[in-house]
Structure formats: C-alpha cells, structure tokens
Length: 95
Image 1 (cartoon, rainbow, N blue to C red):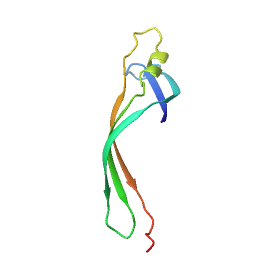
Image 2: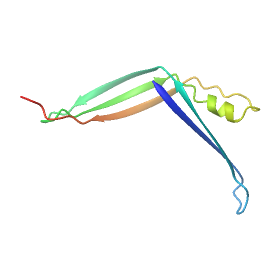
Image 3: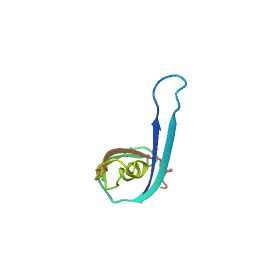
Image 4: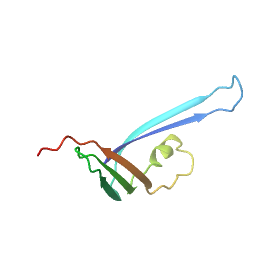
C-alpha cells in the first residue's frame, strides 16, 4: 500500500492580532498492513455487501513530524491501528 502523509503545524498564541505561522509537509511512503474482518452480504437482487475490518499498518507517521522539527527529539511511532468500514455497491445479478 502507498500512503500520502500530510502534516501541518500551526504556531501562535490565541490573542487578536498576533502573528500565526504555518508550515506543512507531505511525504509518500509505502507500508505493509494486516487486517482481520468480516464481510456481510445483503440478500437482495443486487450484490451489495459491507466489510468491517480491524487493521494494523506499519507506516511511520512520525517521520514527517521529525522532518518538520529537526532540532527536537525524534518521536517514536511504529505503526497505526485502525478500523475500516467499506460498503460495496453491486450490480444486478444475471440469471
């Protein structure tokens, strides 16, 4: 899987008229993921289904943060856990 990580950092205090600085960075990274889930098929004329998946991706999301702030201590992030909900729209079944 190839992912785009987009990081935006905004600095400033919450007073009116104070300067606000914003920096952003985008990086492309490839990763390997592992998921476990279930697919629910709906009994209709169309082959609609829904998938629920719990996943783990080995993407290093902390790398762009470390590049944005090179003088600070590196953040350690090994992976990301997530939950996916996917709905598949089917077409009419042929008899």
